Length: 285
Image 1 (cartoon, one colour):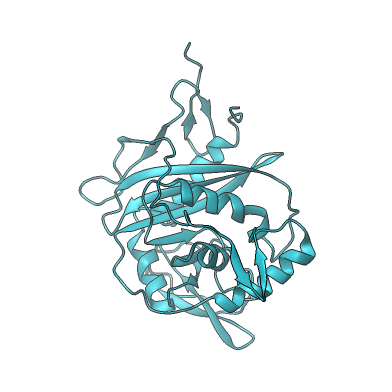
Image 2 (image 1 turned 120 degrees about the vertical axis):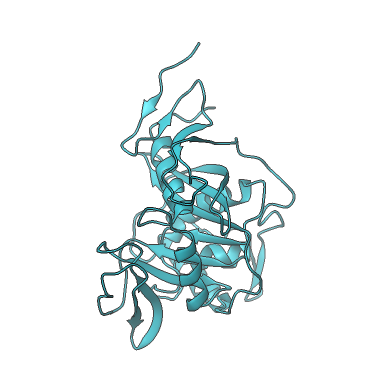
């Protein structure tokens, strides 16, 4: 029996009859980003090639840490101190062909993270995957990784193809401890990541010029930690910071190449819309 679809504020319809179809506009062949054909969402698939398919156990300070996302605040802060020593900012070693965006939303009891995979630089949609986790960790500034990170890494690992780089809705090194959620995920999964946030967490900057592509540096205690990037004319800028295995120049270049007709890079825009639609859909046992 077909059940009526549930419509979210994003305009994405989630239907129990067709749970893997989302009415998102995909990029048109002429590159304008205004195509209207509904993109087909493939169900999550598992693969031995998926990012992080190897054990996530890490040896740090002589201790084996089975979970990089502990649920108590004291251990979480210690984990940050450990992981930030692993962050590396270097130019991209190879040109990416697959880029993913990962975002999360919440209901009263769950975190729902979605990873959306696209070809690069064509920005053709390939696949989406999601992961639901219990909402356990409290909302605490600077500790977003431990509230959303497990679900986000799970969603990325469910993609059937490994992304070459991941855009994360959150901060990279533009963080009080130098390890925001993008850096955290990059170290755990050992892949290049970029923090792409809609608002500033830390730092000082001068407002960039109003034209698309204009940018200014973000500084924190005299250290460059990000770029304030205008992604459309006369709109609020994004706060872009390298996460792991990438540098500032490469991070800006990738974000600009992932733009279509919107302020938000397309992989993140899609992940955000689907995560918000899924939060009103009951979890299936």
